[in-house]
Length: 337
Image (tube, rainbow, N blue to C red):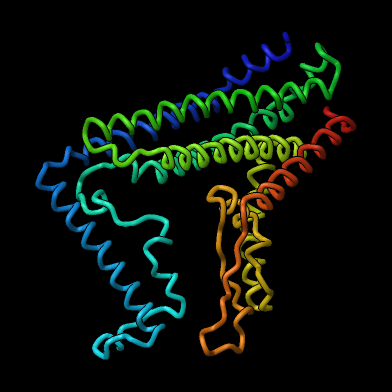
C-alpha cells in the first residue's frame, strides 16, 4: 500500500503530467467558450422554419424511395425515368437511414447538444488517448533513463511488484482522470445546450449510444496508456515510444498501404491498426476492396467489406497484452544500470 501511495505521489508530482492536465483544461475551456460565444437560443420563428425544412426533406426522401420502387415494378412515369435510382432501393429507404433530417440540421448559430455530443465525445477520446500514451511513456521512460527505478528497487527489491505497481497506479490514475474529465466536459456542453442553445431529442436511445461510445473510448484510453508504458519500458526511454509510433505510421500505415495498392492486395485495410481502431469506436467500419469487382462492369458487384467491434477489440487487446508481457519479461532480466 505504501508503494502504491508513493507511485501516486510521483505520478501527480511529475511536471509533464501537470502540463498535460493544464493543456487538457485549456483545450476544453477554449472549446466550450467558443461554442458558447457562437450559439444562441432559437426563436419561435427559427424553430418553425427549421421544422418545416426538416419535414420537407423527409417527404423528399420518401418520394425518392417510392419512385425507386415504382421503377422496380415498371410503373415509373416517363418524365421521371431520367432520374438516377440505385440498383437496390433499400439504399434510399428513409426507414433504414441512421438518422432522418431534424430541425436542428437547419438551425444556424444554434448549438444542439443531441447533434453535437458525439463529435465532441470523439474529440475528448482522441485527446485522452494522446494524453494517456504520452503520460504512460514518460512516466516509466524518465525513471528508467534517470535511474529512479534503481533507487526504488533499493527500497522495494522486487522488480515485478515495482513495475506492476507503476502500471496499476498509472491505469487507475488515467481512469479517474478520464471519468472526471468526461463528466465535466459533457456536463459543460449539456449546460450550454440548455442555456444558450437547445438540448435536442435526448431519448433513451441517444443516451445508450453515447454511453456505449464513451465506454469504448475509456477502454481505448487505458489500452493506449498501457501501450505507451510497455514500449517505453522495452526501449528504456520515452522517445522509444514516440519513435515506435512514428515508425509504424510511416512504414506501415503509409508505406505498406502504398505497396499493397501497387501489388493489388485484397482487403489491405484489415491489416491496418487504424482500421481496427475505427471499428472498435464506431462498432462497425466499412471499407472498399478494389479487387472484389475487377472485371465486373454491370454494377452488380458489391466491393464493400466490414470490420466489427469484436475482432477489432481482440486485435487491440492482443497487441497491448503482448507488448506489456514482453516489457515485464525484459524488465525482470535486464541490467538497469
